[in-house]
Length: 314
Image (tube, rainbow, N blue to C red; front, side, top):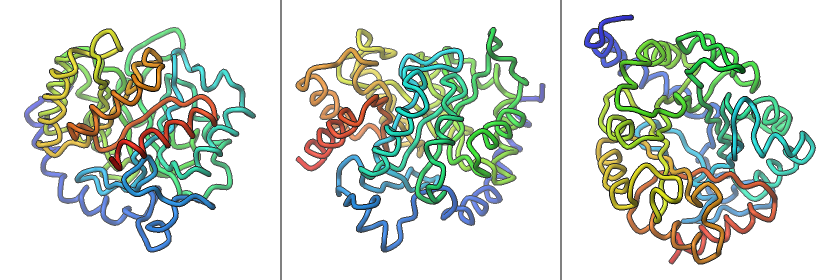
């Protein structure tokens, strides 16, 4: 393992080069905010200004995509999820419906086993019409033998997703504040993949308040995927709503991209009023750049888009 200080210097010294690469790739594998995309989010689907399918820029990364991402990992573990358990046909129908409604952001992970499903669902869709986010599971398990770094995993993901570039690659499920040291090699190799143009932005998904606080301030982090709703711990969060909101505001002030997850409390917030209250809390406090929701049916997609649209326009 490298000395942390020297590694950090290496990351910072590579910033300008990575920035240039990111600029060169601005039109690759991300929704292009050209004239066509300013008026249309998808085939026959108008972009809803201020809503779920509005094209937003994810902070300093320059990545342009929709405010809402189609999640693929509800109850995900061991390369399986409620989404993949739908079967290939139903999964493809779901993703195609999301695309038809204007969603351009796809949230995947090795843990969910959703790469090959997404590859099939996106077959024939122009690559600049969608954005890919995926995650490295860094822990050894009966289904996973990690390399200890990121190069092997990222290259495998690119093959599985049939894409030269991954817009966002995260280290999955950080559970303590020591993650930069514990996963230093992964951080370093993700930096190398950014230098090569294989990944555009890196970061972590957090399942712990200490991990989240570090992610909000650490210079390595481009993107923070955080659990946020208006309820708190009883709805799958890492602290109270107010506590998490404070950290996310700090992260955004520090130039981090904040992506919200568990907006509906991992399925715990089911009533229309509860869902609306959570979206409104996130919106009114300006907590996220975009959000991912694990919608499992076309009906849920339509309902979520409509719900976000009403609140973001109010």
